[in-house]
Image (tube, rainbow, N blue to C red; front, top):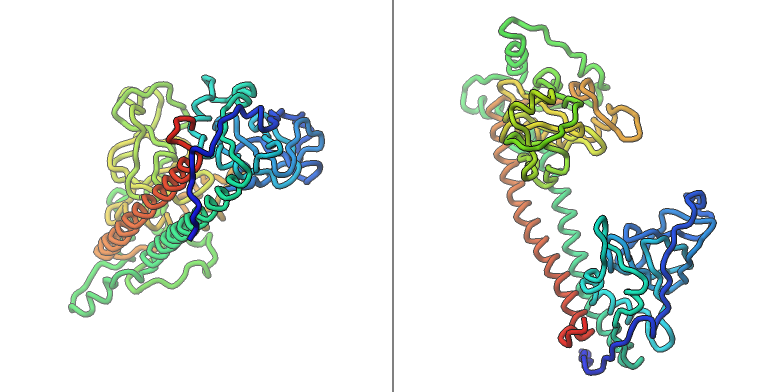
Amino acid sequence: MSSFKFDSQALEFKPLKDVAHVIMGQSPPSSAYNDERSGLPFFQGKTEFGSLYPTPRKWCSMPTKIAESEDILMSIRAPVGPTNIAIERACIGRGLAAIRPKDGLRVRWLLYAFRAMESKIDSLGTGTTFKAISGDVLRHLEVPIAPLAYQDQAIEELEKQFSRLDEAVTNLQRVKANLKRYKASVLKSAVEGRLVETEATLARREGRTYETGEQLLQRAIDGRSGGGKATRSKAGLAAMPSANLREIPEGWTWTTTGQVCECIVPNRDKPKTFSGDIPWLTLPDFDDSEITVARSRSGLGFTESEVALYRAKAIPTDSVVMSCVGRFGISAVLTRKAVINQQLHAFLPSEGVMPKYLAYVLRTREQEMLEKSTATTIAYLNKENCNSITVPLPPVAEQARIVAEVDRHLSIIREVEAEVDINLQRAQALRQATLSRAFGAGSGQI
């Protein structure tokens, strides 16, 4: 066990300009950017940062400001303060500064000092549109220095403690990944008839009849036709290779969203005011970990008269709203009337099709939707695409049991995810407390 103890009395504070060179970044001409790895790696800001080293996404053939290998890279514009270490010579844009310690100062010592001071550095940033820190302010930042022997011992102790924290964080992140896979597995089992006992099995055991999925589908189609006997169209199903229509349990039938739902697409008139009680929903209002409840941003909504004025369509309660741009399948059941934007489409299920069950089905159809999507810069589902999504339809009673069992599993998953998130926050807090202890937070300097 290490006998080294952090000692704030060993620290002395000096302006950064006295102990390091500060090179403020500058954006080269846009014509010099490339993706062909021509020239130096080009780092523009925190978006390229990793936990310790950045990953290049662009290269620059005409660099203006250069960071050398082992320089500390600091984000100096929105956000201010995050740091990485350059692992090779690189061009830096105006969102970064390169900080090169002079003799007598270890790179990792100064890196960890900056990370201990990150909130203070952020507080020194100014600006209305976005926060930034100037070179003059950065150069006059007071940083801790110490004898080299002390720096080396402190770095060793910090990295020993961080190694244990990193291992714990890795394990927690593994748990989160496993929970995500488990959630997908639950949904897949649910819509393939493997999560609960089928209605056909129960009816046979109890010696009774039941309404099959096929009969339910015909009833749903008849209901949508206004009471007259409607002809079932298999056009949507025919568009898919039969191999993709896997075997389903007894009593189920294959259908499409267009046969059992009314698909509602948003009007293209953009709202100009948000003052009413009818929520305005966009994709960021959906919680990816909870697909049955849509949230509306506080204060953003329509009045009834504004809905008419902007020719917007108010989507009724119990409709299923789904993402139709970029990433598909994120679905939610509306608990109140709402207006949706262009990133979303809505499905109003026929009688006998439970909205929650439909939402769970849509969540498993991301790959199918991607294959059906319009080929543009960003993948998009139009109304025709949305009407042809395949749906395995079980009897109503079986839908209810599936929904209840999925809800039970997802509730457990959410509880575990919440606990994992708490522990990840604790790990981050412990890391910051360790840095503060190492660099004299108690002295008031940091």
